[in-house]
Length: 128
Image (cartoon, rainbow, N blue to C red; front, side, top):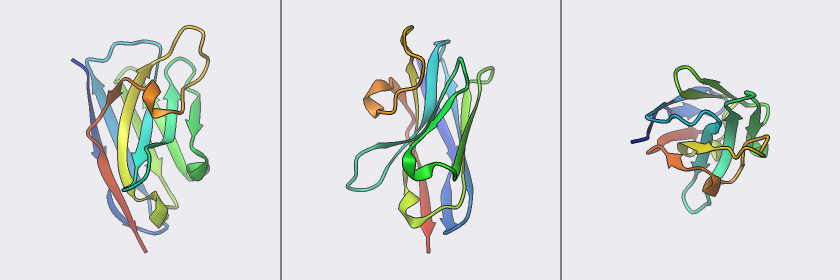
């Protein structure tokens, strides 16, 4: 049984930083992408950052480029996200995701429906 468990998040002021971590247990797909999506009330779930297991290539959503950094530890099956220069519009529930990568694919998908497993989510709230 696959389980993704997030930690971190919380409340922070504009311009501040916060870290998120996700541990995947029972997940033994060697060729995979793991990462983070977020969803604010009334909005669709959007990609924040994802990273490929094989190459370590990260991909970021346009709104977070240059401010957030994703990393992973394949041995520990963990993925982390460092959120910096936070803005009120970054306020959302952040979800960890994991999904297999097909043999012919060379990078991570950026749409939520391509990911097979999800964590319960952790809230990040940025106040002015």
